[in-house]
Length: 284
View 1 (spheres, rainbow, N blue to C red):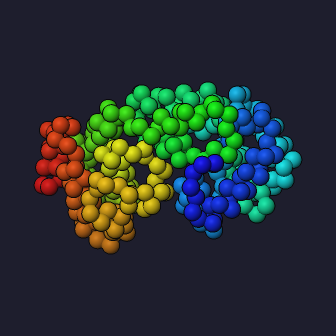
View 2 (spheres, rainbow, N blue to C red):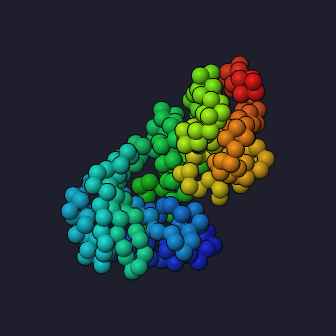
């Protein structure tokens, strides 16, 4: 582990993760990484520990559960099915700490990262893997995937434009913007809030792309956006004021203004006509 960790909450969790790794046979974890809040030095007293075990071949869920029992894990809760990236996850308790343990094939992890680096995929659910793996802390390495992690320190040149084009597309539909205006007028808060949260997600995706940073999970937003160089002023305060609806029309007005200010940051050589059309429709 070479990453500098400052927080005592993180250091104590890393120590516990290393203890678990020391009890792990190679077939259950050829390479082992810590991800989540601990790897970002953001853990607090309520944080769990997210550990991913990278293997040549996935063992059965029954074998995973039996190993967790052998090392002293309790309150074991398997997800029941692989998640979108092909990994298998089990939640359990170890010495009063909650552990989120995932198993992933090394070849699958490599393939998932490669299609991101080549720009073949650029949706939020796929790109969060790049952010997760780039920030991961290796607590067992065998020279297999650390070079892949290094590749993530370079952001692909054409990815920025692909993300922006994909993200602004829903705003090009006049009906969608008008539906928001109607919902605000009717004070239909739930459907309005759903749409404004989606808009905020699009704003954040654009800002990460403009800053050439991999998109993290939304739950890290307040911590990570403060370090973005390119962003509207008072970003987090503005987001909070939008989603804490007091007056529907005022919240929507603030949401549209945030979208407008974000679009104004996009370079003119990126979809200029489309961006200007959206900005004009928002300003109506």
